[in-house]
Amino acid sequence: MKKINSKYIKEIIEKATLIASLSKCKRSKRGVVISTRNIELSSASNGPIEKVCNSCLREGLESGISLELCSNHAEQKAINDLRRMLYLHNEIKESVLYHVKLVNGNVSIDPGIPYCIFCSQEILNIGIPNIVLCGKETSYMYEKEEFHELSIYNSKKIKNE
Image 1 (cartoon, rainbow, N blue to C red):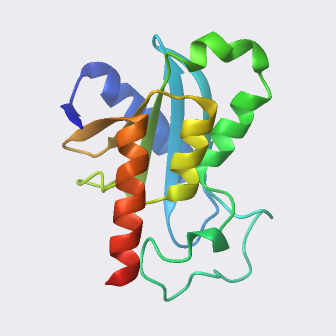
Image 2 (image 1 turned 90 degrees about the horizontal axis):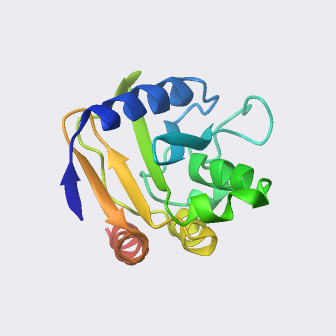
């Protein structure tokens, strides 16, 4: 894990925040931008399969629990878009996935920790080498293997609490 902060990160955070604000999820709004060499390859927000959930299947559950109930994570949607563009293979090997979580409509101060095994597996499978969890004050970059290992560890820790 490496602490990062730069002008480019701030621009990405603004873009991911706009994307997250478009989410129809009633529980948590998230946005992802995947880019390489300052060129955006893909972006997405989390959200329900249909335009709006009638009721949240995860209502009342702790964060990080039963993530499989909401099948459209922002990371998964952005990665699926990349898969449709097979000609981007070389760019993917040099890309970075930036993740933003909104709290009351604003970027969370703390970027949080990796804990979604589904998303970390998708990241490993497609080969995105670096992931940045973006916070308002600080962002952290992880290499894909470290991100996946931490996702497994933190997922187990959350479920046991």
